[in-house]
Every structure is written in structure tokens, then in C-alpha cells.
Image (cartoon, rainbow, N blue to C red):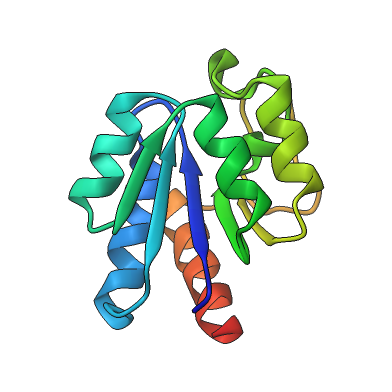
Length: 135
């Protein structure tokens, strides 16, 4: 079985949306929700994630053996998401052999060149389509 890990912080809105969309068409997939805080984890579990854990260690351990990691682009930047992504989490996600599907969010002092300014829903749809193409 493919291990899909969704990492999110703040209120978990991006992760929640990704999980809801994946579960609509692939209810059999096991999704791992890793929140940088308990609110994010809770939101993703309510959206239908099968497993959930919170914090730095959970992100590091789950990044290690994931096949696909999905989340906002900040999960690979130390101190992103208003400081919720620790340097250790960013390093673990970056070093993971997992295929990373990163949602562009042009905030927190970074800009992704080449990304059109689009609604978050469009980015999430594109990310889910990429996940589906990999299954």
C-alpha cells in the first residue's frame, strides 16, 4: 500500500481540503495526517485521515517512510508557517525519498516563480490530480 502523508500547520485548512478530495474518490487509501499543531491534526482527522499525529517528531518519523508527501510549500522551508516548521522538519521532508507534492503559497517572504496566482482550491485540485495519476 502507498503511504501518503499530508503535513500541514496553522488551522490545517490545506491538509483538510486535500484529504476531503482524495477520500471522495479513493476511500480505500490510508492517509496519514501530520499537523504541526493539534488544531491542524484535528482538522485533517475530521476530514477523513486514517491516522494522525502532531509535532516535530511525528513529521520526521513519517517523512522517512512515506511514498508521497503533500502539503504547502513551506514544509520544506525552515521556520515557515509562522515558525511551525522547524529546521529539523524541513530537513526531514527535503531529505525524504518520498515524491513531494507542494502547494504553492506565496506568503512568508517567498515567491514561487512561474506559478500563476490562482485560488487555493485550484492548487489543491491540481495536487489531488497528481496524486491520482501516481496511483
